[in-house]
Length: 424
Ligand code: SF4
Image (cartoon, rainbow, N blue to C red; front, side):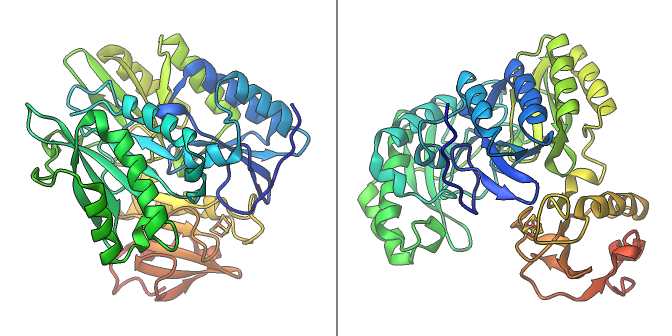
């Protein structure tokens, strides 16, 4: 296989990897958000052999293999192709930007198993070349409800299971400038074709080809052209939402899911290989990816507890109470030429300060104002500038800062104390 590749500086794929400070970033997009454990093990080995051994879990439920070179890209493609994870073209790969619930088909509390809808949507997207004009960040969220809904996940097209017990339907929405705009409901069997129709209409009506920039009159025109049933209210099974995302989540009396959080969304190939071996030893065949930088597996109740304990020993997060899963940190100086700051090292120190002070909010540590690791607001945001950080409270990297932080004082507890005390 010849690695003839067009390299762009945005939104990495496998066919179109993104150059970074540590080499090419190659994105792996599992189908339906699921990977066989055997494939996970092979990807871990590939990251060591063809990359620099570092793997990211992305907020679109994908994996990224880092540090790939132009020489090692071709053998990596070969491996991905053998695992059914390489699309025929960069365009096809880019529009296959679909997230489903990580417990789809496993969670008895879900309203609709969205995996068949996702598979049909993939096929429909691939069959229409006009849809290749969708921008690479154009995303679909397919939310069947249950314990781990996709609430809050940004998406251009959103399909959400709704309706009464007797008549499950799919609420169809688009991202608005502030909130989702609901356009009506469709039968489950029509959900994928409706999503594709909607994507075509967004292409037609939005100057940026993204839903969030549609003008109100354009949204109204799309609603009219789509012609969905608007008689049903959007009502989801919110009572079943799990209070935790990491650790053991009971599904039935006998079965559980285990959420395995990956600190800052980065795992090394050795740890991932050991995790795959441990899962295989417990007869776990499949792992699910999520938008929360956590992997999910299903197991019997006793095995699940053992799995969680073993995963914790590997450094994975199995307890939501700790600060690590409330911190987003970008790659920093080792991987990105845009900063000289060791963001992840600083984030680790700040995690200790969060634990010491009992701070239970969110933290975003960004090497520069691009804010790659998080677009949503956080309680505390550090934005790299030169050799220090601007401090933002309750905002994003774009918000007005209220002070500066010197990295040599990075473990100052005052950052997480009250606004009055935190004179930074
Ligand atoms: S936020 Fe800035 S420093 Fe961090 S990875 Fe993105 S571009 Fe690099």
